[in-house]
Length: 109
Image 1 (cartoon, rainbow, N blue to C red):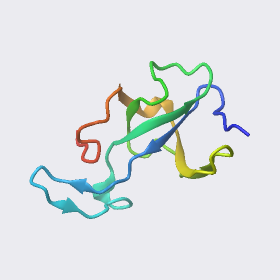
Image 2: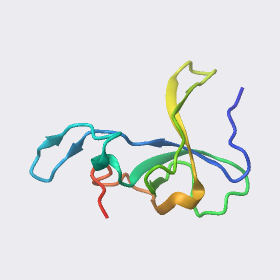
Image 3: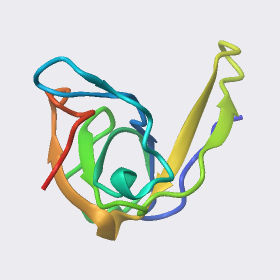
Image 4: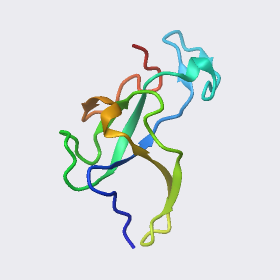
């Protein structure tokens, strides 16, 4: 069984990883705290038909805070590998790039 997003929807893996300052200091997880209210990078996993953005599977997108759903677990029936994904609100996409963001864990605007 293949998981397919509905028309215009995007599934991606939002990056909730620890942040590291340029000085090398590891910051604690701030998800759920006021400091955690910031844009996040996500890697596009699947695209629904007729999406209106110049986005391809594998691209990295920068998303406004809170413009993603709760994570959902999906198990690949072919490989048995499980992973977590989010549905992304396409209106919350601020930027897209092909390369892994250099500082994707420490985004400030």
